[in-house]
Structures are given as C-alpha cells and as structure tokens.
Image 1 (cartoon, rainbow over the protein chains, first blue to last red):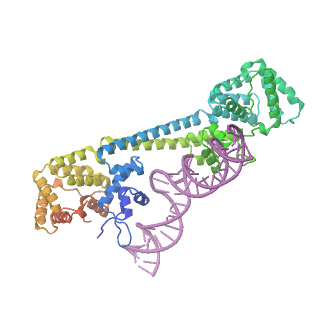
Image 2: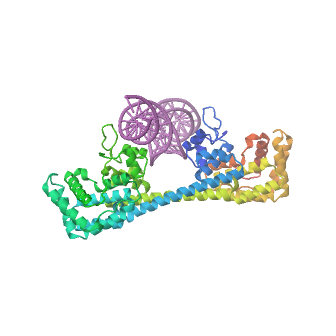
Image 3: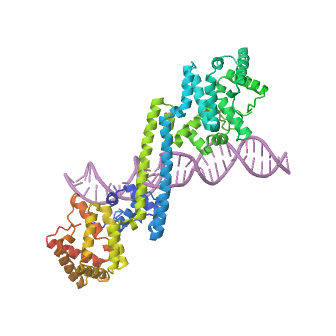
Length: 258
Length: 258
DNA sequence: GGTTGACGTTGACCTAAGGGCAGGGTGCAC
DNA sequence: GTGCACCCTGCCCTTAGGTCAACGTCAACC
C-alpha cells in the first residue's frame, strides 16, 4: 500500500524536475513531506496541491521569493501583488524588445557597428586608393567618435566627406599615410605638416568646432582619444599631427591640448 | 603627462561601471591594458575602442561568452551570429509575453487560480449552505484536478454542476460533510454510503468516465489524489468513500483502485 | 609634514532558478 | 545475486556583474 508518491512521481505529475521540487523545499515554498522507512519523501495530495499552486505562479513569472507570501495572503492583496508582478514583466519585455531592435539595426543596417553614412565614407576611402589598414584605422576612429563624442559625430562625418572632395587634401593625406613608415625625425614630416595646415586653414569648414557642453578637460581627453587614435603605433604620425596642431594653434585655432 | 586613462575614467567614458570593465578583463573580452608605476591600469584609445565594441554588443543582448568570437569573426559570420542572437531574443520575448498573459488571466479572471466556471460552482456551493471548509476543500480538489487530469477537468466540473441540481444528492452530501466529525466506526456511515451509491447509480452521468489515454496505474494514482484529497484528515470520510466505491464496483462500475 | 577623501588593487562571497555530478543507499525484477 | 532505476545529501556551476573587506596610492588642504 502506497501512502504517498515518491518525489519523482510527484515531480512528473506536476510537470517539474526532481531538482525543482527539492529547490522549493529548500526555499520553504513547499513544506517537506513525511519520510518513509528508508528516508524517501512521500507526497500526499495536500503536498501536490501546494506544489501545483507554486508551479502555477512560478510559470507565470512570479519570483519564487514572493510566492510564499503571495499564497498566504488574502485575495485582494493577492490580486494587487499579481498586478505588480505583471507590471515588472511588461517592463522587462519592453527592455528586451529595445535590445532586439538595437541588435536588428546592428545586423542589418550598421555594418561593423557603424551607420550607413559612415560605411559609405569608408568605402569611398577605399575607392580613392587608401590601403585597408588606413581604412580600418578610420573605421575605428569613427567608432570611437560615435561612442565618446556622439554629439559631434555627424559633423565629424561631414568634415570627413568634405575633405574627400578636395583632391589636394586627399593627396596630402595619402602622403601622410606613407609617413607612417618614415623616421620621426624625417624633415619631410615638417614640410607635409605645413602643407596640411595650410590646406585646412584655407577651408575652415574642415576644422572641428570647439566643444560646447562638456567640461574643458573632459572634452580635451575625448578629443585626444579620437584624434590621436593609433598614434602610439607610428611615432612619425604622432609628430606629424603635433606639428599640424601647433600650426593651427599659431593661426589662432582652438585646438584642445590634452 | 597622462599616458592613458584610469579605469574609472575609461568606464565613465564608455558608460559602464569599473566592475564591469574588470569583469570583461577576467572573461578575456578586453585585453588587460598596461599598468603604470603603481599598478594602476592605463587605458589607451585602442582599449577604449575594444571596450566600446564589447559594450555595444552586450547592450544589444549578445551573451558575453559569444562577444569575443563575434568581434574576431569576418563580416558574414558576424551578421549570421547576430541573426542567431536576434532569434533567441525574440523567442525569450515571446516566452515572457506568454507568462505575462497567464499572469494577467490569473489576476483578473481566475480568482485563486481557477477559471470562472469553477469559481461559479464554488459560489453556488456556498449559497447552498455548505461551510467554508468544505468549499475550500472542493476548491483544492478542483485545482488538483485541473493540474493533474486536465483532460477531464471540464467533465469533472459538469458532473459537479449536475450534482448540485439534484436536491436529494445535495442533502446526502451535506450529511457527508457532517460525517467528518463522526467516529469511523459509526453505523450511520454505511447507511449514508448506500444512499449515496444508489443516488449515483440512478444517474450515471454523475459518474466519472473511465480514463482514456493514460496508463492504467498512472490514471489510478491521479484519480486517487483528486478523489481522496484531504481524506487523511478525516478517517470517517475515508471510510465513507471506500464504501461508496465498493458499492459502485459491485454494480459493475469501473472505479480505479489505487 | 600629516591627514583626509577619492580612487585604485585583489579577493571572496552573493544574486535566480535550478543543472550536473559524486558517492552512497533502496526497491524491485530477472 | 545482480542489474537497473530510483532516492538521498552535498558541492560546485551557470549570467552579468554587485557588494564588502582590507589595503595601497594620489592630490589637496591645513
């Protein structure tokens, strides 16, 4: 004569695993049933009932930590708590939906985490004959700019596009790429820096506007991160940039100093 | 001269906590940057770049464990993986939505985890003069029936409704409630069992149909759990039920024997 | 020069809801 | 008597970090 179900039977009837039942015992959600002679748990109908109630709420998304109190509260409190849980679930669903939409944009529109317009600029760079390394570096700089200085990302892109419309500037920039392999003391660097600065000063729209809302030092750091990205890998480029910046400053341009 | 940002600055720029950055280091998602003289981590632009990439994907819901491989894979693989993640996210959203709907029904329609029709029957029980304890016991039996034998829940309810339409059966059932306080050996129990069995045999629609799809022993256990719920709290009721079942069996009815 | 407060370092433990495994005992059928 | 299925307890594992402790470092202020 069976005076109750074993834990495996009880779990199967309720539709959960043995581990889950024991978990509920440990949390105090379902009282431990009596044991038989060999220490096995024996479940009667009242235990099954409790198990079913807990499971129903758990499946509906009620946190286990709240189910105990919930099942012992009066109907109006019960309903109020359920409303609360429902609200929280709705919130989480909205969060996840927003995440999925971000993901969708990442997977479909933004190749490599950048918007279409930036990708177009990068493609144009490649078409103009810039090497893959330089394009990759520009991609990284754009990514950094978007993340660190989002408010000027669009104008940053616009200046980049405009600079690509200037054949002479494109030529100078290509020489800048070559300069990567030069010695940092190479005299051609100073010459190139002068030419670049002249060109930039000739069309002020190519220059970054001074930062608006951020604190001065914070902006300088962000500017430095974006504009000097990868500089430590090529000292000659660092020197080139420093010289250009110095000339711009000499001409009265407000270039953040890190 | 700063040769890099501290972890706090880097975290603030990327929009995460220090702990998160260190977590990414521990998972190998972002390489440890160089340390300065006092052991502080110093972040350069390439570190920031990587941090931004990881963060973008993590915020979109990509599991951290996959981000490392993802960022090192080629564009088509990248897109395919993102699609996969998106599919999983959609699945989770659907799961949560289903949970919320269940919860909504629990909070609004089903008082105490039961559908409206069951609640109506229980209210009718109370109106007919059955005590709160009995009503509560019936509520529990209904709950158990729905969870353990869902395929016959509707017919179970129908039989219950029909039995409430039979004034004589209602009277006998009320005497059965009284029997809870009798001694198990009380001769009135046998008398009552006979009367109940006669009444049930007079209208076969009041009897449960034999189980269809389940295995014999499984069905018997489920039947026993529902029909003998709370019997162990009142031995006289156990005896009453046993006698009724015996008479039904004697009349050729297929009553599961546990 | 000492103190204070903000920031950095490591490490251990915590979350929700169980899953997996080890090591050992039990019940039942061949 | 042996195999197999089931049960017991206890320990560690999962996500994406949070919290706390104990301690070192930096810059400013008195």
